[in-house]
Amino acid sequence: MTPFAFNTTAGIRLGSGIAATLGEIAGARLGKSVLFITDAGLVSLGLCQPAIASLEKAGCSVAVFDQVEADPSLATLMAATQAARAINASGIVGFGGGSSMDVAKLAALLCGSGEDIDEAWGVANAKGPRLPLVLVPTTAGTGSEVTPVSIITVSGDEKRGVSSPVILPDLAILDPDLTLGLPASITAATGIDAMVHAIEAYASKSANNNPMSRMLAVEALRLLGANIETAVNHGSDLAARSAMLLGSMLAGMA
Image (tube, rainbow, N blue to C red; front, side, top):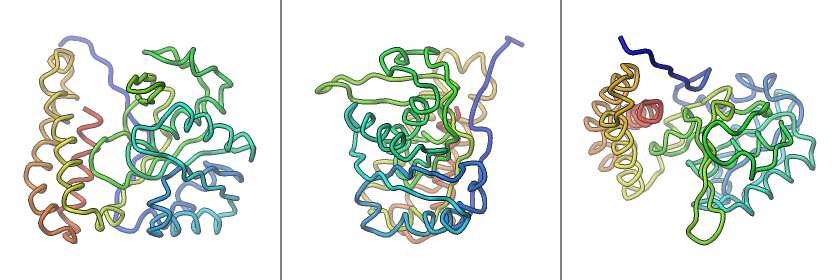
């Protein structure tokens, strides 16, 4: 067998309603001062509040940064990093789609290591350490909660990325309840995005030498293909939503 390496998130929890127990699960790991990175839409919908309340019940002081936009900018990343430094954050939560999770990954890195972002761009340039980091996806699409990659828009249409195992989170919390209210159009778009990730992983040259990637890609496609139609047409179907969230995560791993 050809030698291969495989890295992913150290801890993964999946379950209906589990985000509302975030403090119990991860409060001790995150510490007393937590920056909660998300977007304004999720805050206005009230999706964040149970997780925040759980952290506060566990003794964490929580500050919310809700300025993340789609395709987050370098300015947003630096604002989140400054917000974390302002409260002397001991840990960071990324709650939302891939944008919020990508910002959380790099804010945790920059605060934990003091690195300059310009030195971290690229593959294996980020050295760490980072702050304790927990990611909570609210869509079944990017799989960012289990990938060592973060993408930021640095200028206009120019995007740059950081790829390093250092930015893998300590814990991913997958709660299908958070996806129940997604519109059909977003469910379809994010689901197809996850399927493309799985296909790319399966077809890539590196996957041909990595049995873990191929296995994960196959199972991801099975779950996503079998459940996307139900999730789109019957958004309150918890079983389909759970399968989509799991499939998206496996595609990200692959």
